[in-house]
Image (cartoon, rainbow, N blue to C red; front, side, top):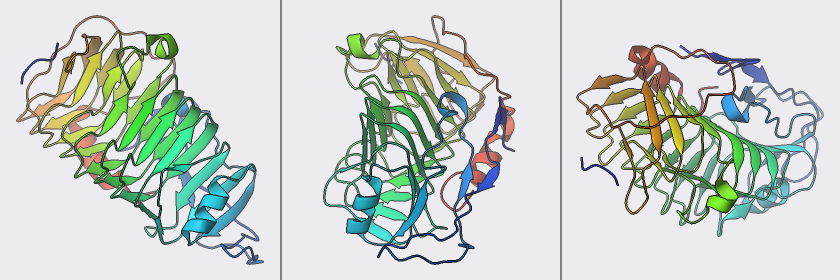
Length: 323
């Protein structure tokens, strides 16, 4: 039960290396073609950690959308595609995303409101450089999906979760996002009775995110082992940071905790304790956390930043317009 209470490199990928997506003859929202190189081509930071194999829409066509109808058509297309969001897209329901998609905001203009994105029973999806606000459900929901990269977004005021990952999803990276004005932030594993689907899955890397006053679930983990919470900045988190439950194994490494009384603990609500190992974290006006048990080895090579420098790195680099 719960208690009361500069960039880095992974094997084969650089977390903040800006890789231009060259867009020649980009298709507009109306279906016309520009016929010229798009000088505002989106930049993509390479996926890291468990989601490092994700390529999204690379190698496919590129479309720029400015309306909800064009957005829905593009993200649900069966083709490999990069969907560039230029403006505010107001959704009237959770919107399904098809496989082999990159959904990326143009500059700081790309915004999703009303509802969020449903990444369900698909693979190879990148969601990047978008502002999500005011969803009447989740901002991003991932279930029965693999190879997902959620990166450099700004997420706030979702009625339910900011980023919820569940139902045997695995090989996912959540990096360089800023979440704020959010109660239930990031859930990993939706229920205590789903061990049959989730055991051996739910392998997620959370790296260089800014949990900015988010109340709880940063993340709250069931079953996933290992889950890597690496070099994130937790500021003014009022309830708790990380919770490990239901046979999960979470490595909390190199994070900067500031004004966070309960940075991490075992168990939560009615969920039994999992395992949690804490390594090389930095605490400012914060509790020391609760650990216990052992965690499976992280299966990829990486180099962690010293935790004392994480606040500066993350506040400078997390969110939209930073890639």
